[in-house]
Length: 337
Image 1 (cartoon, rainbow, N blue to C red):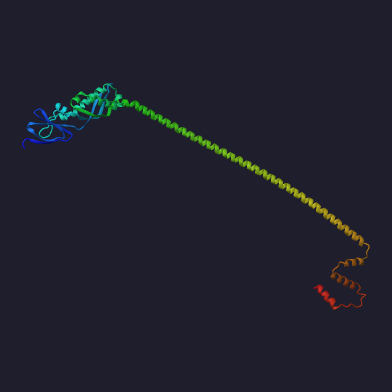
Image 2 (cartoon, one colour):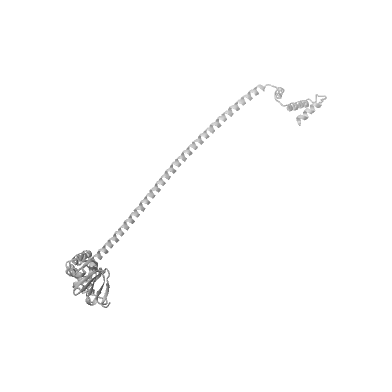
């Protein structure tokens, strides 16, 4: 139908239908028909918006510092914002004015104003060391900022990601810390060297103690060996003395034995000589025939045959005839064989 249009908004947009200066319909996520020639539509986004920022300010000690961060906000009262900003939709569905696009700039200007006020009361070192405290103070201040309250804007979050001084100031601030770090590094080097020297000294002492202990052990072994050799030498000397004493005693015993044997032989010889002398004295007065007869008492049969033939030979002149029997010859032959 000519002039009638269908409108359907998302839940993240707050739509208001205005007719003759009055709001006849409003709400989020509405869908309805409206007569375009006699009504206008206002659409206010309800979602959160993230706006990054980076600006340079001066601290209490007149040092420039650059703050970098992000602010998150949302439109908590869309009707209040629509009364102060033009969020009317054109026929093509786009905003009819630049106010919706300028809203983030207005919010960032409010953030910058709050940070400028806060930085005028702190020094550079406090800013660099307390960015979280600075962001917290800015959030509290923005929550009661008149400009944002009038527009129905609520700051959801505010964070400072970095706070950087100028390069010259940064180098000046880093110098003492750099010197301290270098001094700590030098101290660490000295401590490490001293520790290495101490370790080396302890190692040398341990080596010297080990060498001393080894030398003591060697000396003890040498003393033990010398003592053992001395004891062994004394034992050998004692054994040699004992052997020499035994030899002397043996020689003395042999000499005594020889002496006794000699005396015994001498006594035996004296006894035999005495016995012979006695026999000689007994036989001294006998004639040869008697001695021969006595000698024949111990003679063998052969000796007796020989003496008998010798007697026959001595008296051959007196013997006229001598007959040998076969038995006698056989006996003589048997004796000779």
